[in-house]
Length: 196
Image 1 (cartoon, helix red, strand yellow):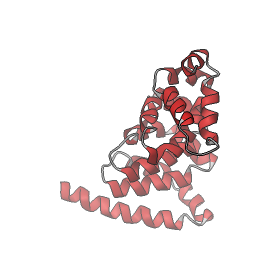
Image 2 (cartoon, rainbow, N blue to C red):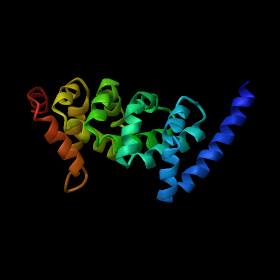
Image 3 (cartoon, rainbow, N blue to C red):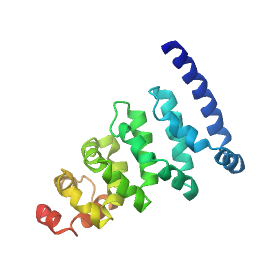
Image 4 (cartoon, rainbow, N blue to C red):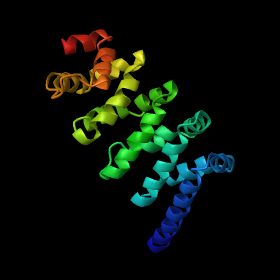
């Protein structure tokens, strides 16, 4: 059985890789969308083959920049399916998952889903890893725009981490995402007390 699954995943990898390359042409990408590529890609997120998952997440990231595609992903529970990758032991999968999450974080409903799925504490934990910091700060900034979500940050290490990153910034000017995140968080009274 395991051999059959392995062979199947190799074929799926090649097929989705070809489709991803063909999708560079927007007309072909639209045709793929009309032929239900998004449900097919999302069904692959339950698999465990890292190469296949990387291609699938990359394809979803590419598709997510269009509103209709993003909405279809939202309707099909993309955040629920993605939470297994945040964090994960494979750095490439984590990186591409964070990029997809960033694209999705422009949508207010999806930001609420991210909070409901417990992603804020997980993202804050990843913030400690310098290699992912720039992308995490952008996602956390988007999440911190929602008044309802600001209180979630109170119960994480985000505020002390932001404070340390600002204080120990090696650059003469602190990065705009970091400052914007700190500003957003301090509009919540409890968070402002912690920062002070």
